[in-house]
Image (tube, rainbow, N blue to C red; front, side, top):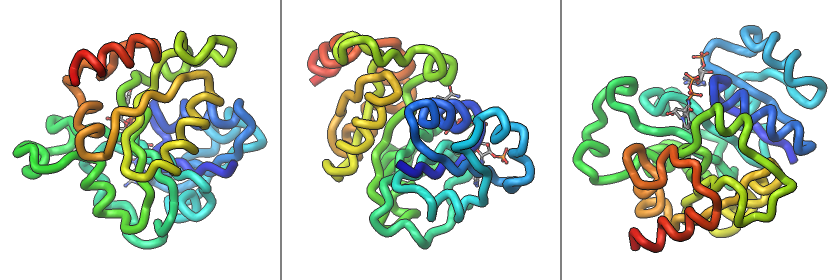
Length: 211
Ligand SMILES: NC(=O)c1ccc[n+]([C@@H]2O[C@H](COP(=O)([O-])OP(=O)(O)OC[C@H]3O[C@@H](n4cnc5c(N)ncnc54)[C@H](OP(=O)(O)O)[C@@H]3O)[C@@H](O)[C@H]2O)c1
């Protein structure tokens, strides 16, 4: 598959590495421009190149967005029709500034992103796992229920299936928390599944205890 990556920091660069190791091709981007990503793409190898945000968006069958949430309005609003978008962003007011709709619990960060990217098929995912664990805890040799869980939420079941398969290819197990609003809320910082090293089996137990 072709995967566009927006955000080349802790999560974006490590996700890129995993996707390439699983046989995918990536274009990775940041806010400062492709010329600032030379050493990263050298490390990532032949199946990686650097591009602008728009090039990463246009290239990807899937577009993986991993930027500080407070900067999501900088993303272009056009060109997302039918794109599967993985949203790994989290809301940290001390980093992102206060966002009133989130503080008041009216919506979730993924729904704000969805409103900003019309037509995108948003799947929240990869947001509950610390980048050091993302780097090291995937293991394709384990049966699914013993693998570290990566949680997903979204309203588009076809998009979730494709993202779940990608998660399995990189050695984790996808655990579905539901629709974007409630599922997304259950994956936010401070929730019982956030930054917890749960296997898929433990994750299912944690979610059903909460239900
Ligand atoms: N760190 C973790 O373990 C972790 C785990 C799960 C989820 N998350 C979430 O994932 C997101 C990224 O976290 P991170 O730790 O990877 O951040 P990071 O290391 O600070 O990297 C952020 C990346 O986003 C890029 N960026 C910022 N604004 C952009 C824009 N408007 N367009 C394109 N690229 C832009 C930055 O590029 P420039 O440097 O060029 O500005 C940088 O490459 C955050 O929302 C975070 O809460 C983080």
